[in-house]
Structures are given as C-alpha cells and as structure tokens.
Length: 447
Image (cartoon, rainbow, N blue to C red; front, side):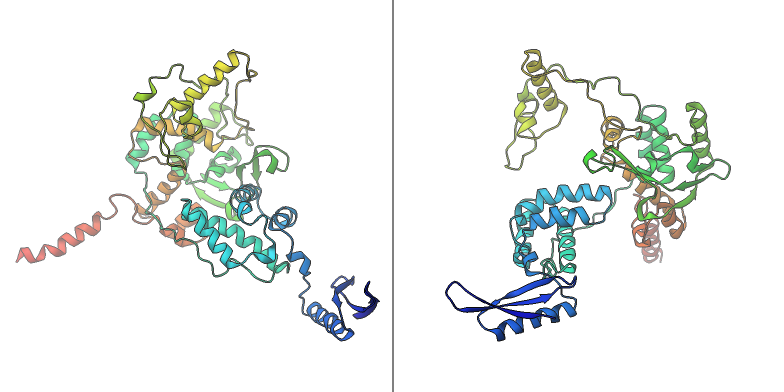
C-alpha cells in the first residue's frame, strides 16, 4: 500500500513525497507535493494505474529515440538475421538523423508526416518510404506495448501510394537467347533448374542432391541460405543456412523427366555426395579483367546526374567518385589511379580480392559476373534478373493451363492472390480475347 512521507525543505517548509509499490513490489516515488492531500491522491492514482496494468514509468518516455532503439529495441526484438541487418542499416541511415535526438514522448504524428514529406522531396521511392515507415511503426508498437509511450505517432499517417507496375515476363524465346549466352556447364544448368522449378535464389543456391528423389522426381524444399555481413552472422560468417524456407513451411513438387536426368548426370559428372551443393562457387584464381587505357573522356559522354544534379565525363575520377558511376571506363580510371599510387609507393599493395564464400554462389557475384554479361550478349530490350525466371516459371505454368492452386503450392506463396498476379502476363495472353472480339464484331459485316 502507498504512503506519504513528510520532510522539511531548505526553506523550512514541509514537503510531502508520495510512494507506491510498482508491479515488481519495488517502492517508487509518485512525486513531491506541498500538501499531504495532494501526495495521497498521487500515490492512489499510481496504484490504480498499477492495478490496471499501466505500469510505465514517465522517465522511460523521456529517453532519447536513439537510446531506446540501440539499447532496448534492436538487441531484444526477435527477427531473422537478414531482417536485423536490413533494419539496422535503414534505421541508422533514415530514422536516426530525424528522430535520434528526440525524446520518445515528444515524437508526434506531425513529426512523422514531416519526415515522410522530407523523404519524398529528396526523391526517395514510395516503396522505400513505406519500408522505413514500417520499421518506425514497429519500434513504436513495441514502445507502446511496453508503456514507454502512450501515443503511437505512426497511426493515421499515410505514406505515398505505390503504383503496382505490370510484370514483364521472360518469354521462352528470350530465355533461350540468354541460356545460349551463358557459359556452358554448371551455370546453364543452374538457370535451367531455376526456370523449371521457380525456386527462390536462397533455395536454389542451397539445393543439394539429398533434396531430390531421382526415382519419383520429387524435389523437397526444406532450407534456404541468406548472405550476411559477418557482424550480423551468429558465427561471423558470410552465409547463413536456415533449416526452413520462406514462410517457414516445407514444400514438395515434381520436376520434369528431362530436368531430373540433367541433374542426375551432373551428380555423376561432378561426383557429388548427398550433402554437397548442386551449384558450387567456382575457383577465383584469376583477377578481373580491367581496362589498361582510357580513351579521351570527352568522347565517352556524361554520367547520370548525381543527387546534386551534376554530371561528369565518363572515364574520369570525378565520374567515379562524385558521379558515383560504375561503368567500365569510370572503374578503369579509378583503378589506374590507384595502381599508379601503389607503383609510387604511396599505398601499400593489396592482395588479389576474392569473394568470401563457403561454397554458396553469392547472388550479386553471379549477377555481375555471369548473368548480366549473358543478358548483354542476348540483346534483350530489358534486363531480367534471376527472380524474373521465378516469375516466368509461374506465368508459363498458368499460360499452359496449370491449376492455380498447384502453382501456388509449387512457388510457396502464402496467398493465392500473389499467384493470380501471373495470370495473363505473357505478351500473347490477350490474343484469345482479341480473336473473340473480332469474331463478335465481324457479325455486322457478315450481313
């Protein structure tokens, strides 16, 4: 039970401090007052809050946003390692500059609206704004549940609308062009496995012979691998294998006979055991080919405008640093500059850079070194990614008459509405509708 204690101040006047027991039974102060009556009311109000479950301490709401996130929310919030990595980068890049120095209780909806408007004026894409708002909302949902604050500043605050663009699906002809441009061997098999199975990249790169029953042709998807910065990895590595795919649900589906035969032949040729990776990172014993001479920069054109709207000549240091251009000519200019410094003894020579991996093929390495060069050789009018092959797998199945529910289960979609996005996405999908329209419209001319 609460109580009031009398004490005498330096001015000789009596003061009354109200005390109550919190939810853990610890004696706490509810404030100091000029009269015993006010102090009694204060500890009584505090006890009512405790009985109602409103156990928050006002002092907790006065902590800075940065302190709460770094000391309480991030260390204790349960999330996947890859999610923690992405959240940490987004928080320190987009949330801390705006809210880091503010007290939790002082952050109001008007501040969140002003922050969203600021991001929009800076040219940030609506989907990125929405992702950052989701993170901020998650932080304050936890703070509200923990009674650090009694107001959720994100509720009722809208972010810019996101326009859903139509999917551009890789056609069978386009896939054949890219397939033929890929290096022969493992990488062609990897691309064909992707188009035949629709696996996510983490599932594909973690695929092992034990996951495929060669007799029944049933493939079991039970694991995935994610790439992490070592400081977010539980053991300081680069690849984290999770014993469950996305949505934490195994799935099983059948592969075609010809695809199974190719995978079986690959197992024999590479002498793979049950636990080996189907697609292993190749040896990195050759340095990347670099430009040794830069043409006249005045003939190479200008870079894209940077955040300040400035452009620079390709093949210059300014194009690489200030323009943030990563074309071959700008990379070459910077590489030659660094090589000259090392030759003059100004920088220490560095060893050959190799991609750290435990055998899994990194997505970005495959994209830069294998996939994008093949896209360029194929001459496609757009640049599909490996994820687009997953989209193509779904679209081809539905276009061929496969059941919508079966396609949903093969792809591992949580909602059938996601699978429905792939209906009628091939370029010739509307041909039947146009033919039906033409037949009906031509009736008037047949009379």
